[in-house]
Length: 481
Image (cartoon, rainbow, N blue to C red; front, side, top):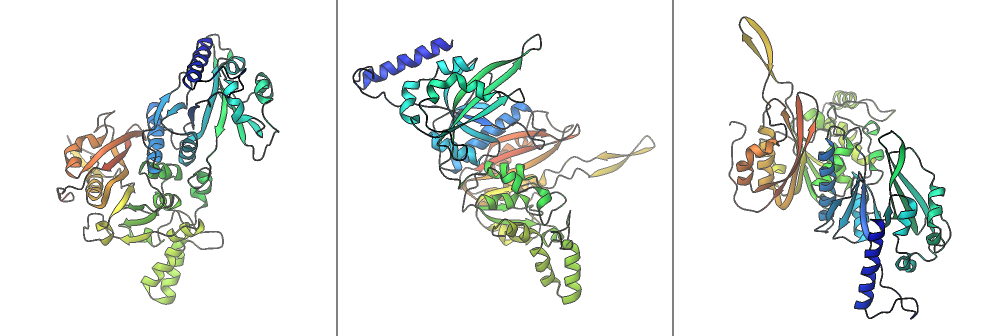
């Protein structure tokens, strides 16, 4: 099969040379046409935070994030195709190598972008499929270093592997471990035979594509935005990995106006601000917004936000001024620590339609509404009493859809988690499917949904909606109904 692939590539090159009126590229001194690269994206394995997403669901989430980021960067029609036998590696079409590198660097769930030069069941067969003649012009005398990626095994001997590519390496320049012009990549897939023997199954050889600028890159942000390092942390703060993924799904870009109507301590807005957005938040809990309901203390040397508030209130007697100073050590402090503009915050209920922030226009609404999992009722049956879990109220989720219909620009996105009890719902059907008529009435379209199984009793769906037109929407009193 590898031989047939190689023959097909050479035959395609022969046809290209005929089309360009060229000879064989050797005797007449003419150069061969440049090689059209085959591009691939390597995705990250599921982290601890992402383990509740089943394998196929996680793969779909990775694809949707990459397509959403590409759209946010003005790149449309990116096609991804699974590679046979390669978990976490997908071929990409309809995009240039530089653009793919920029998109992958912005994605949280993608690791890197590659230009594939050769594939095979071993390093020797992978090199046999490399069209060195066409690569020569682009790699000649370039500085380089090698990067091994090993799947299914702890480590591999990269030096022994590179010995199979000596004719190609001779065309390269000197080795540069700090800032090479070309980063060679040898990806190995290992697996076990029927008798349990671990052996090399597949090899991909090529180069890793680096983005031309780091302006849109999010590499390293998960380490920078760890929850434990924040000055102020609410009890229900969203993990940074999910916060960034949700903002990527919402196609947040520099200058976007992003609203979180259930902002809490601002984790989602913090990720949006890192991506360049102007952020706005609403929450019914005044203590959270003012830094008086903290899940941890502030920086070492500072007292807890609640203590700061109480002390300032006693000294000044001005509760409003004290609130502002406490907030400076809480939500605003988290933003200031990262050099970001703090969000515009308003205390109030999302059902209060008179709140000014809820009547403005936004490019994205990203939120994690309250779940109501603790709501139970006491029922008496045949002389015995027991607590029964109440059905989860869809009101906050429906209000988010209605708010998005009235506040989003056309093409804007709404991204949020929709909780369900497993006993109440179809196991593989999003709760949003029950309300498609309501969604359509709000000029919103369901783009994607991803189930995250939290326990045997309940799950939550990460849903993505998009504003499709500016027609007049149907207003519904969700709270009373």
